[in-house]
Image 1 (tube, helix red, strand yellow):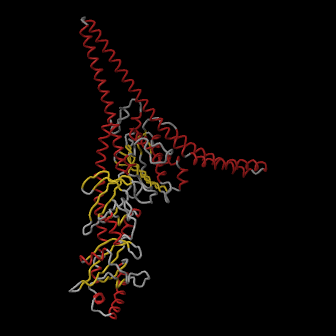
Image 2 (image 1 turned 90 degrees about the vertical axis):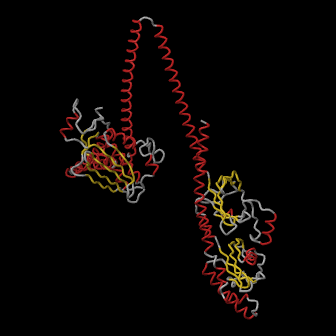
Image 3 (image 1 turned 180 degrees about the vertical axis):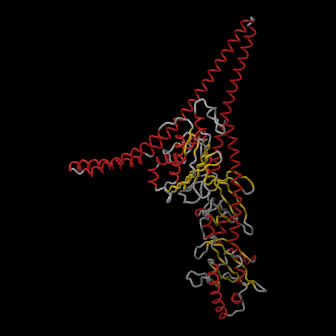
Length: 627
């Protein structure tokens, strides 16, 4: 059992990891594409500034102060409009000394004009390599963003640097609604983008002193603490995948996904950048599935072990019997005693066979009686659920009877016989109504004889609805009946089929509980030598799990204590005993539909012959009862 459970656990875990790994690779593709698409929207903007003659004039070394001031005003207005149209955080121009000479936020008090940014990494990269791409935090306003820098030059020399600062907050917000956390780290392991805000500007590995000194000098992250995230590597899986564990740190923020526990981390370098994109897929569900399969494998191993023990005991028993028979035959040297012994053994075996046949007959009778008791219990359960509505239906006539009888006494004392007669007639009508209600319940609650007979399905539907009339009226359910004419007549046990119809209609009413416009549709028609009866509700329909276990005993979608899950299995058994079938599915236009198929009743004369004692089965009818 232990080895089977361990093997099943490891196999299920490997299969689950493979599935999660494939899903993670797909997520990596999607996240990488979205990030590159977001950055690509703004990649051309720094180069556009090089084409502006005003920008060239502003940075030209031969410009005098007046001309430079004029160019600066024009460039400031141009950058302001460009920043507003492109939706960026800021756009500015830096001269070769690292001083900001024009900016889109020149009107603001905390604008960039005149600032010395010669120490910023994107400026240094642009002056050295012609372009710079850096994610960092602004030193003026402390606002994080992605800096796209491009060197501005004429035909002879570099004149300055154009910088566009882009916000990636919208991309991070879209990542916060996905199924697994994702983060982007720079070449030092600092999380610059993350779908979990608490993880941002933390590190996946400890920073050495050289890296911290470089950050302190360039102020790339504005002197943030850059604390470790606490990600522990459990096992390397290869191809950028590894098992990691993230401990719970204080009070966790509310997210769409778990942010602590064991994860499958899958990483990929983003082309054109030193960044690494990492997706963390939580493994809690994989562990649960592996544990459940390990338990199932252990139970199966236990069952096989018990079966092997039973087979071994049977083999030993057979071996002992054969040895005893051989010893008996070798010791028995008298022919007559041997014949007598064999005759006695044959008689005992015959008696045992007869006892086994009788025991089987008694067992079948007991099972049939148990099924009848379950059907009867189901009827009484339905009556118990409808007891409130029945009490309400009977309470109103009783109140009216009490009032009318009291008034009649007073009218008799006054000698008003005409009014007394009217009251007595109304009392008689109310008594008939109460008798009709109790009669339907008494008819529904009686035990079935088990004999097949001609059953008009329209009448059976009316009897079933009479039992559920109070609930239908209370729920405001719209009834739509389509019964073919002439009325289809089925060959079955009428009382049991009424129980099946009550169960189907009762389940349909339960399914439409709380619906704004509940509607119950019943269609009945003849098809060949069968009768088809369909019951459809306008509820939410059946889930995939419910359809797979629809007729499984003790399975129910109702609240605990409301149902035992025996209604549909018993109904299916009743229909099978009648030679029919019961199926359930979702209707294409919504709701659930149950189809009841029963054999068509023979003509009245043939049915009478087949129902007579000792009569042979009528040709074309189900022979199950005769068997």
